[in-house]
Length: 155
Length: 155
DNA sequence: TCTGAAAGTAATCATTT
DNA sequence: AAATGATTACTTTCAGA
Image (cartoon, rainbow over all chains, first blue to last red; front, side):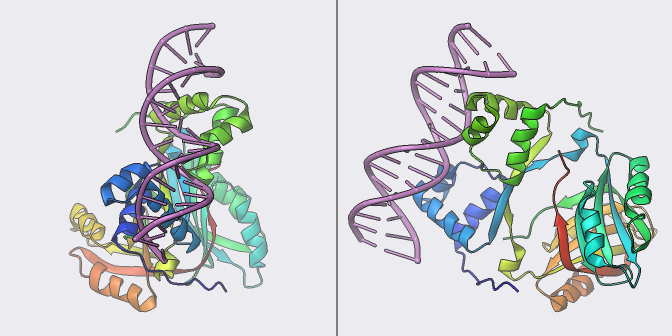
Protein backbone atom coordinates (compact mmCIF):
# COMPACT_ATOMS: atom_id res chain seq x y z
CA UNK A 1 0.00 0.00 0.00
CA UNK A 2 1.28 3.38 -0.95
CA UNK A 3 0.79 6.30 1.36
CA UNK A 4 0.06 9.39 -0.72
CA UNK A 5 0.49 12.59 1.23
CA UNK A 6 -2.33 15.02 0.59
CA UNK A 7 -1.31 18.29 -0.99
CA UNK A 8 -2.64 21.81 -0.93
CA UNK A 9 -2.81 23.51 -4.31
CA UNK A 10 -3.58 27.19 -4.68
CA UNK A 11 -5.07 29.18 -7.55
CA UNK A 12 -1.70 29.51 -9.32
CA UNK A 13 -1.15 25.74 -9.20
CA UNK A 14 -4.64 25.25 -10.64
CA UNK A 15 -3.92 27.64 -13.52
CA UNK A 16 -0.65 25.84 -14.26
CA UNK A 17 -2.34 22.44 -14.15
CA UNK A 18 -5.33 23.48 -16.27
CA UNK A 19 -3.06 24.83 -19.01
CA UNK A 20 -0.82 21.76 -19.05
CA UNK A 21 -3.69 19.25 -18.80
CA UNK A 22 -4.99 20.68 -22.08
CA UNK A 23 -1.59 20.97 -23.76
CA UNK A 24 1.54 19.56 -22.16
CA UNK A 25 3.74 21.84 -24.27
CA UNK A 26 2.09 25.11 -23.30
CA UNK A 27 5.04 27.54 -22.96
CA UNK A 28 5.95 28.04 -19.30
CA UNK A 29 6.55 31.73 -19.95
CA UNK A 30 3.02 32.10 -21.31
CA UNK A 31 1.65 30.63 -18.06
CA UNK A 32 4.07 32.86 -16.14
CA UNK A 33 2.71 35.98 -17.86
CA UNK A 34 -0.88 34.87 -17.17
CA UNK A 35 -0.35 34.32 -13.46
CA UNK A 36 2.17 37.13 -12.92
CA UNK A 37 5.21 35.27 -11.55
CA UNK A 38 8.53 34.30 -13.14
CA UNK A 39 9.12 31.26 -15.30
CA UNK A 40 11.51 29.89 -12.70
CA UNK A 41 8.75 30.06 -10.08
CA UNK A 42 6.36 28.11 -12.34
CA UNK A 43 9.09 25.52 -12.66
CA UNK A 44 9.53 25.11 -8.96
CA UNK A 45 5.77 24.68 -8.52
CA UNK A 46 5.77 22.04 -11.24
CA UNK A 47 8.55 20.16 -9.46
CA UNK A 48 6.53 20.31 -6.24
CA UNK A 49 3.44 18.98 -8.05
CA UNK A 50 5.48 16.19 -9.63
CA UNK A 51 7.03 15.30 -6.29
CA UNK A 52 3.56 15.06 -4.73
CA UNK A 53 2.62 12.69 -7.58
CA UNK A 54 -0.43 14.80 -8.41
CA UNK A 55 1.17 15.02 -11.85
CA UNK A 56 1.86 11.45 -12.86
CA UNK A 57 3.47 12.30 -16.19
CA UNK A 58 2.69 13.70 -19.60
CA UNK A 59 1.80 12.14 -22.93
CA UNK A 60 1.40 12.88 -26.59
CA UNK A 61 -2.07 11.66 -27.54
CA UNK A 62 -2.24 9.51 -30.65
CA UNK A 63 -5.43 9.47 -32.72
CA UNK A 64 -6.00 5.76 -33.40
CA UNK A 65 -8.35 6.52 -36.30
CA UNK A 66 -5.48 7.83 -38.42
CA UNK A 67 -3.86 4.40 -38.06
CA UNK A 68 -7.12 2.77 -39.12
CA UNK A 69 -8.32 1.80 -35.63
CA UNK A 70 -11.95 2.78 -35.96
CA UNK A 71 -13.63 0.40 -33.52
CA UNK A 72 -13.59 0.90 -29.75
CA UNK A 73 -15.17 -1.78 -27.58
CA UNK A 74 -15.54 -2.77 -23.95
CA UNK A 75 -15.35 -6.49 -23.26
CA UNK A 76 -16.44 -8.16 -20.02
CA UNK A 77 -14.54 -11.37 -19.36
CA UNK A 78 -16.09 -14.11 -17.22
CA UNK A 79 -13.47 -16.19 -15.44
CA UNK A 80 -13.49 -19.77 -14.23
CA UNK A 81 -13.56 -19.98 -10.43
CA UNK A 82 -10.23 -21.82 -10.58
CA UNK A 83 -8.64 -19.31 -12.99
CA UNK A 84 -5.15 -17.99 -12.24
CA UNK A 85 -5.91 -14.29 -12.53
CA UNK A 86 -2.24 -13.26 -12.66
CA UNK A 87 -1.77 -15.57 -15.64
CA UNK A 88 -4.86 -14.14 -17.34
CA UNK A 89 -3.63 -10.56 -16.83
CA UNK A 90 -0.23 -11.49 -18.21
CA UNK A 91 -1.88 -12.95 -21.31
CA UNK A 92 -4.06 -9.85 -21.74
CA UNK A 93 -0.99 -7.58 -21.52
CA UNK A 94 0.42 -9.43 -24.53
CA UNK A 95 -2.58 -8.33 -26.65
CA UNK A 96 -1.57 -4.85 -27.86
CA UNK A 97 -5.12 -3.87 -28.82
CA UNK A 98 -6.14 -4.01 -25.14
CA UNK A 99 -5.55 -0.50 -23.81
CA UNK A 100 -7.26 -0.79 -20.42
CA UNK A 101 -7.84 -3.71 -18.09
CA UNK A 102 -9.76 -3.65 -14.80
CA UNK A 103 -10.61 -6.13 -12.07
CA UNK A 104 -14.25 -5.40 -11.40
CA UNK A 105 -17.14 -6.12 -9.10
CA UNK A 106 -20.21 -7.74 -10.61
CA UNK A 107 -20.73 -10.76 -12.78
CA UNK A 108 -17.54 -10.70 -14.80
CA UNK A 109 -14.15 -10.68 -13.17
CA UNK A 110 -12.24 -8.64 -15.74
CA UNK A 111 -13.29 -5.75 -17.92
CA UNK A 112 -11.15 -4.49 -20.82
CA UNK A 113 -11.17 -1.69 -23.37
CA UNK A 114 -10.14 -2.78 -26.87
CA UNK A 115 -9.10 -0.77 -29.92
CA UNK A 116 -9.51 -2.61 -33.23
CA UNK A 117 -9.43 -1.84 -36.94
CA UNK A 118 -13.04 -2.94 -37.54
CA UNK A 119 -15.65 -5.41 -36.33
CA UNK A 120 -13.95 -8.36 -38.02
CA UNK A 121 -10.69 -7.51 -36.29
CA UNK A 122 -12.52 -7.15 -32.96
CA UNK A 123 -14.11 -10.57 -33.46
CA UNK A 124 -10.68 -12.02 -34.15
CA UNK A 125 -9.21 -10.47 -30.98
CA UNK A 126 -12.09 -11.82 -28.89
CA UNK A 127 -12.26 -15.31 -30.43
CA UNK A 128 -8.60 -16.00 -31.10
CA UNK A 129 -6.79 -13.95 -28.44
CA UNK A 130 -9.09 -13.53 -25.44
CA UNK A 131 -11.34 -16.62 -25.47
CA UNK A 132 -8.33 -18.93 -25.86
CA UNK A 133 -6.74 -17.79 -22.57
CA UNK A 134 -6.87 -20.53 -19.90
CA UNK A 135 -9.46 -19.61 -17.27
CA UNK A 136 -11.63 -17.47 -19.57
CA UNK A 137 -15.20 -18.84 -19.69
CA UNK A 138 -17.00 -16.41 -21.97
CA UNK A 139 -17.10 -12.72 -22.91
CA UNK A 140 -19.68 -10.02 -23.41
CA UNK A 141 -19.01 -7.07 -25.73
CA UNK A 142 -20.16 -3.51 -25.93
CA UNK A 143 -19.16 -1.49 -28.97
CA UNK A 144 -18.77 2.28 -28.63
CA UNK A 145 -20.52 3.82 -31.62
CA UNK A 146 -19.53 7.35 -30.67
CA UNK A 147 -17.57 8.88 -27.80
CA UNK A 148 -19.08 12.12 -26.51
CA UNK A 149 -16.88 12.87 -23.48
CA UNK A 150 -13.15 12.29 -22.97
CA UNK A 151 -11.55 14.35 -20.23
CA UNK A 152 -9.70 14.25 -16.93
CA UNK A 153 -10.92 14.96 -13.43
CA UNK A 154 -11.92 18.61 -12.99
CA UNK A 155 -9.50 20.81 -11.04
CA UNK B 1 -17.92 12.83 -41.73
CA UNK B 2 -14.26 13.70 -41.58
CA UNK B 3 -11.94 12.35 -44.24
CA UNK B 4 -8.63 11.46 -42.60
CA UNK B 5 -5.83 10.99 -45.10
CA UNK B 6 -3.75 7.92 -44.33
CA UNK B 7 -0.12 8.56 -43.51
CA UNK B 8 3.08 6.60 -43.86
CA UNK B 9 5.36 6.71 -40.84
CA UNK B 10 8.89 5.34 -40.89
CA UNK B 11 11.14 4.03 -38.11
CA UNK B 12 12.30 7.53 -37.13
CA UNK B 13 8.70 8.75 -36.78
CA UNK B 14 7.97 5.72 -34.61
CA UNK B 15 10.91 6.48 -32.32
CA UNK B 16 9.80 10.10 -32.00
CA UNK B 17 6.22 9.07 -31.25
CA UNK B 18 7.18 6.37 -28.76
CA UNK B 19 9.34 8.80 -26.78
CA UNK B 20 6.68 11.51 -26.71
CA UNK B 21 3.81 9.12 -25.97
CA UNK B 22 5.64 8.18 -22.77
CA UNK B 23 6.70 11.72 -21.87
CA UNK B 24 5.43 14.71 -23.82
CA UNK B 25 8.32 16.84 -22.58
CA UNK B 26 11.12 14.57 -23.74
CA UNK B 27 13.76 16.98 -25.15
CA UNK B 28 13.70 17.01 -28.96
CA UNK B 29 17.51 17.09 -28.96
CA UNK B 30 17.63 13.90 -26.87
CA UNK B 31 15.46 12.18 -29.48
CA UNK B 32 17.64 13.73 -32.20
CA UNK B 33 20.77 12.22 -30.65
CA UNK B 34 19.08 8.81 -30.38
CA UNK B 35 17.99 8.68 -33.99
CA UNK B 36 20.99 10.50 -35.46
CA UNK B 37 19.36 13.46 -37.19
CA UNK B 38 19.20 17.15 -36.28
CA UNK B 39 16.73 18.69 -33.86
CA UNK B 40 15.32 20.78 -36.68
CA UNK B 41 14.55 17.61 -38.67
CA UNK B 42 12.71 16.07 -35.69
CA UNK B 43 10.72 19.26 -35.53
CA UNK B 44 9.68 19.11 -39.14
CA UNK B 45 8.60 15.52 -38.71
CA UNK B 46 6.55 16.48 -35.67
CA UNK B 47 4.81 19.20 -37.63
CA UNK B 48 4.03 16.67 -40.36
CA UNK B 49 2.61 14.25 -37.77
CA UNK B 50 0.52 17.00 -36.21
CA UNK B 51 -0.75 18.11 -39.59
CA UNK B 52 -1.82 14.53 -40.36
CA UNK B 53 -3.72 14.54 -37.03
CA UNK B 54 -1.97 11.33 -35.98
CA UNK B 55 -0.89 13.41 -32.99
CA UNK B 56 -4.09 14.87 -31.60
CA UNK B 57 -2.46 16.81 -28.76
CA UNK B 58 -0.57 16.36 -25.52
CA UNK B 59 -1.59 16.29 -21.88
CA UNK B 60 -0.23 16.34 -18.38
CA UNK B 61 -1.73 13.34 -16.62
CA UNK B 62 -3.27 14.03 -13.22
CA UNK B 63 -3.37 11.26 -10.62
CA UNK B 64 -6.93 11.45 -9.25
CA UNK B 65 -5.97 9.50 -6.12
CA UNK B 66 -3.90 12.40 -4.81
CA UNK B 67 -7.07 14.51 -4.92
CA UNK B 68 -8.94 11.80 -3.01
CA UNK B 69 -10.68 10.25 -6.03
CA UNK B 70 -10.18 6.59 -5.19
CA UNK B 71 -13.22 4.97 -6.87
CA UNK B 72 -13.40 4.34 -10.61
CA UNK B 73 -16.64 2.93 -12.00
CA UNK B 74 -18.34 2.15 -15.30
CA UNK B 75 -22.04 2.88 -15.41
CA UNK B 76 -24.42 1.58 -18.08
CA UNK B 77 -27.40 3.89 -18.57
CA UNK B 78 -30.71 2.51 -19.91
CA UNK B 79 -32.70 5.13 -21.81
CA UNK B 80 -36.39 5.51 -22.43
CA UNK B 81 -37.30 4.89 -26.06
CA UNK B 82 -38.59 8.46 -26.24
CA UNK B 83 -35.50 9.98 -24.59
CA UNK B 84 -33.86 13.01 -26.17
CA UNK B 85 -30.30 11.70 -26.33
CA UNK B 86 -28.76 15.11 -27.06
CA UNK B 87 -30.38 16.44 -23.89
CA UNK B 88 -29.11 13.45 -21.90
CA UNK B 89 -25.54 13.95 -23.19
CA UNK B 90 -25.71 17.65 -22.34
CA UNK B 91 -26.80 16.78 -18.79
CA UNK B 92 -24.01 14.20 -18.45
CA UNK B 93 -21.41 16.76 -19.59
CA UNK B 94 -22.43 18.90 -16.64
CA UNK B 95 -21.40 16.14 -14.20
CA UNK B 96 -17.65 16.72 -13.77
CA UNK B 97 -17.03 13.25 -12.34
CA UNK B 98 -17.99 11.70 -15.70
CA UNK B 99 -14.74 11.47 -17.65
CA UNK B 100 -15.89 9.32 -20.58
CA UNK B 101 -19.25 8.89 -22.26
CA UNK B 102 -20.08 6.49 -25.10
CA UNK B 103 -23.11 5.64 -27.21
CA UNK B 104 -23.02 1.87 -27.28
CA UNK B 105 -24.57 -1.18 -28.87
CA UNK B 106 -26.30 -3.64 -26.58
CA UNK B 107 -28.92 -3.29 -23.90
CA UNK B 108 -28.01 0.14 -22.54
CA UNK B 109 -27.81 3.16 -24.76
CA UNK B 110 -25.10 5.08 -22.95
CA UNK B 111 -22.03 3.91 -21.10
CA UNK B 112 -19.97 6.23 -18.88
CA UNK B 113 -16.77 6.14 -16.85
CA UNK B 114 -17.03 7.88 -13.49
CA UNK B 115 -14.36 9.02 -11.02
CA UNK B 116 -15.60 9.45 -7.46
CA UNK B 117 -14.16 10.00 -3.99
CA UNK B 118 -15.62 6.78 -2.56
CA UNK B 119 -18.62 4.45 -2.87
CA UNK B 120 -20.93 6.89 -1.07
CA UNK B 121 -19.97 9.65 -3.49
CA UNK B 122 -20.49 7.28 -6.45
CA UNK B 123 -23.95 6.38 -5.12
CA UNK B 124 -24.74 10.08 -4.86
CA UNK B 125 -23.63 10.75 -8.44
CA UNK B 126 -25.73 7.85 -9.73
CA UNK B 127 -28.86 8.53 -7.65
CA UNK B 128 -28.91 12.31 -7.58
CA UNK B 129 -27.14 13.30 -10.81
CA UNK B 130 -27.62 10.52 -13.35
CA UNK B 131 -30.93 8.87 -12.42
CA UNK B 132 -32.67 12.24 -12.23
CA UNK B 133 -31.96 13.08 -15.90
CA UNK B 134 -35.14 12.98 -18.02
CA UNK B 135 -35.09 9.90 -20.24
CA UNK B 136 -32.89 7.78 -17.95
CA UNK B 137 -34.71 4.58 -16.94
CA UNK B 138 -32.17 2.78 -14.78
CA UNK B 139 -28.42 2.19 -14.45
CA UNK B 140 -26.08 -0.71 -13.92
CA UNK B 141 -22.68 -0.19 -12.26
CA UNK B 142 -19.34 -1.90 -12.41
CA UNK B 143 -16.67 -0.78 -9.98
CA UNK B 144 -13.00 -1.11 -10.95
CA UNK B 145 -11.21 -2.61 -7.98
CA UNK B 146 -7.81 -2.40 -9.64
CA UNK B 147 -6.58 -1.20 -13.04
CA UNK B 148 -3.90 -3.43 -14.51
CA UNK B 149 -3.40 -1.90 -17.97
CA UNK B 150 -3.52 1.74 -19.07
CA UNK B 151 -1.81 2.50 -22.35
CA UNK B 152 -2.27 3.81 -25.88
CA UNK B 153 -2.40 1.94 -29.14
CA UNK B 154 0.93 0.26 -29.94
CA UNK B 155 3.07 1.91 -32.61
C1' DT C 1 13.93 15.80 -46.29
C1' DC C 2 17.71 17.35 -44.24
C1' DT C 3 21.28 20.84 -42.04
C1' DG C 4 23.36 24.79 -39.39
C1' DA C 5 22.74 29.37 -37.66
C1' DA C 6 19.98 32.82 -35.18
C1' DA C 7 16.45 34.17 -32.02
C1' DG C 8 13.41 32.89 -28.41
C1' DT C 9 12.26 29.81 -24.49
C1' DA C 10 13.04 26.24 -20.80
C1' DA C 11 15.52 24.45 -16.92
C1' DT C 12 18.75 24.97 -13.26
C1' DC C 13 21.13 27.38 -9.66
C1' DA C 14 22.66 30.66 -6.30
C1' DT C 15 20.65 34.07 -3.86
C1' DT C 16 16.97 37.09 -1.65
C1' DT C 17 12.60 37.87 0.78
C1' DA D 1 8.75 27.93 1.52
C1' DA D 2 8.50 30.66 -2.49
C1' DA D 3 10.24 34.08 -5.40
C1' DT D 4 13.88 36.22 -8.63
C1' DG D 5 17.75 37.05 -12.18
C1' DA D 6 21.55 35.01 -14.41
C1' DT D 7 23.38 30.95 -16.84
C1' DT D 8 23.31 26.98 -19.64
C1' DA D 9 20.66 23.95 -22.55
C1' DC D 10 16.87 23.38 -25.56
C1' DT D 11 13.22 24.68 -29.09
C1' DT D 12 11.77 26.91 -33.09
C1' DT D 13 12.22 29.11 -37.42
C1' DC D 14 14.45 29.97 -41.64
C1' DA D 15 17.55 30.04 -45.67
C1' DG D 16 19.77 26.92 -48.27
C1' DA D 17 21.72 22.13 -49.72
